[in-house]
Length: 292
Image (cartoon, rainbow, N blue to C red; front, side, top):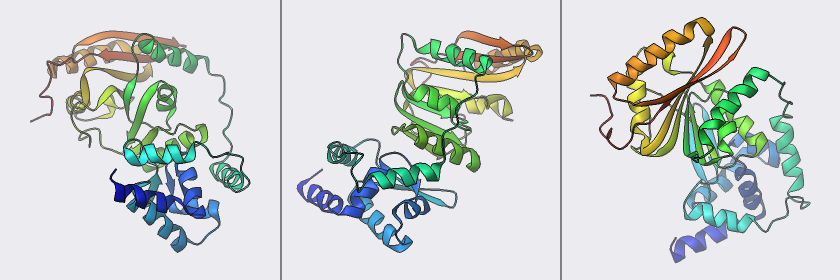
């Protein structure tokens, strides 16, 4: 960030409402209506403050359906500056604590998770892949309500969840805000044409979506394309026990079509259902992976 940009950023942050906005948007992705509700100010006034912060590089803005969302950037000089500005602030300061309470009321209380033995076994199974290798940059394809993303994000440097369903994206975004996972983002995304550059992620998860596609080979190629050469692709499915053997055969066939080496299949069963996780390890040899 050059001198003029740095000066602009400091001027943008040096205003009480805009500083409050930075504190709120550092928690995650919030809409204008969310911020209006928390601050108790008019929509035009809040929007003007948000524009100043975006122009200064302290916030980023993007659209999700009819919603416009704001957050502190995950990386870059703007992200670094915001964190340096906010770190000394006391979260219980009388001018900040009411905003925190209103935001938490808006999000609703986090309900205690029911003790589900099968889900706990699946969580242990998934985490077993990362005992000796970090998650790194994570992409969760088919993020749903965000359960898998939330589980692995605590071990990831950054995490992105994509889904075609707006309701699922909103639910996942709310869950991340409640749990304070600030290094995560939820975006609209089609698994057949993922809008990320090649070799972006260290870990890619196909989260119970591969077999829903009419073009599963295309989905696998896209997942491989955005995966780094030393990365790991995990294919997660949840099925009736009698279907698992045929699913393993299908995944093996698809993997052969796209030249994806499968390192292992691991299973976690309970009664008549099973979680199945297939580990793909493409390696640097599969560089040209986008379908023709």
